[in-house]
Amino acid sequence: MNYRYRLLYFLALLLLLSCSGLEPKPQSEPLMAETTIRDQDQEADPQELAYRYFVSASLAELDGRYEEARRFLLMAIGQDPDSAYLCAKMAGVLRVLKEDQDALKYALKSVALEPGNIENRALLAEIYSQMKDDEAAIEEYRKILELEPNQKRIRLVLTTLLIRKGQYKEALEELDRLLQDDPNLVIAWYYRGRVYLEMGEYAEAEKAYLEALKLNEGMEPALFDLGALYQVKKNYAEAAATYERLLSFYPANVTVRERLILMYYKLGENKKAESQMEEIKRQTSPGDPGRQALGLIYLRHGKLDESIAELDLIVKAWPNDDKSRYYLASAYEEKGEQEKALDHFQKIKSGSEYYTNARIHIAFILESQGRSDEAIGILEKAIQIEKDKVELYLMLSSIYENRKEYEKAIEVLEQGQKVDEKNVELMFRIGVVLDKKGDKEKSIEQMRRILEIQPEHADALNYIGYTYAEQGIRLEEAMDLIQRALKAKPDSGYIIDSLGWVYYQKGLYEEALKYLLEAAKLVPNDPTIIEHLGDVYFKKRMYEKSLEEYEKALTLNHPQSDKVKEKIQQLKKLLHQNQPESKRSSKALRP
Image (cartoon, rainbow, N blue to C red):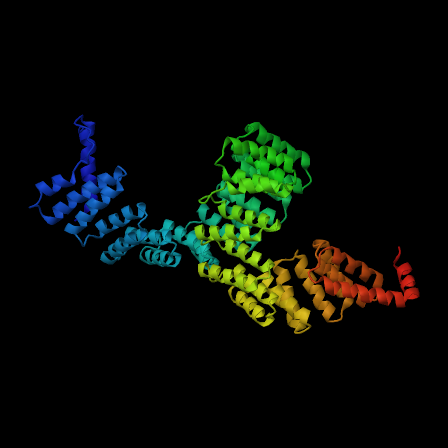
């Protein structure tokens, strides 16, 4: 039976009656009550009865009465169990009711009954996607495209899933197919830009975004992403120009204005930044949520009192604005007013998107106050509520790590792996803790597992390379690993320090000094990097410079202070023994 066309006829008839003035009287009960159908139609043909139940279900659904729609559909399917259309309708209703497993059962049956029905397969794919089974959804979308290759919408949805799964090559293949069929499909150019942006291929991303903007010059997401791309490339002038263009189309977009202000500050154009801040003030009133952007800008630039003033007014006017409260608490924390920070972080309750980070901040503050037991309790309770938040496991393990309770730290990290077994951050921390336990071999094994998942994971590459450098072994491999890490993070002082340390271990002290000085500029207060500088100065017989660096490392709370103190004592003894030479060296060093 063709339920769809009969329903359209029925609805058209109802519309005709209402237009002719024969409108039915308002009723509190459904048009066809369940009891009426049962009483009057016990002898009716099953398919005819199924249709009547189906009409009642459709009317209930149109009126938003989904539980009632489900009951009528269940009766309809009881009369006509092999109707793919009825099964699909039931799947759709159950999906709205968020009963995903039952929805899946009916969707699968509808597809089994009519394998060539595109709409039913699309519904099945959507249910898989809602259940976060992206692989099954992708498979269904591919089957639809085998049946009807020209389904643009389906190919676009498939592309978004492939992007979400990180399957960028496959996503680009689908986009190429779309653009081959329709070169003016602006959304395909936009998605192409997104894919290349995710891949870090910025030149190709820029080309794609510019093509999208040729077709639609005011496309908001394309302009926004293009501005973000220029920011990543540190091309702040182009980023500012793009955000200016975006604001010309959407002057009320506070987020874009906030980004533009940041770009002006980066370019040293403070007056322009302040002018944009005044524009935000002009468009909003104190306490208005739109002033949140001002509070965040002040916070980023260390203007804590101004940030607190703006955000506090918003929180007083809008107590449930968790974002403003979270950043107000962060401003108090940065200012050193920990009790006020704790008070605001604690007011952010479970269910808020800021709950997890708020709990982490609370734990951090409590630990800094020597209240690590309380911090542990806070995090354990948060994990019970937000079991899938890996950040909570990482923070809890770090507290145990700081307490040198390494077995406990590893236990917590392994609990986190039950949530996400291939999470590289969890794996990395396990490797670090194993190293602190003194098990370097297992630590290296852990880091190599990370590289199986992410071959260019900079921190894992650096960790293995630095470990080899520290041991003075496999120095060529260490050099290769660290240089690969440096490609991924070219501005990392820690990785540059590792490179300098490999040169040191190879006896190439000039090269070592060059990289260690660069590392110290990037991370000026790291005691290990400062110690390394002392070591290389020592090898170059620049003893007074060496002593200066060792003493500085000690003031920075070097984790192995006894080792540094021993170096200082030995160096002072050497300087005392060679006092005349020391004086000459000292004079030679003066400008």
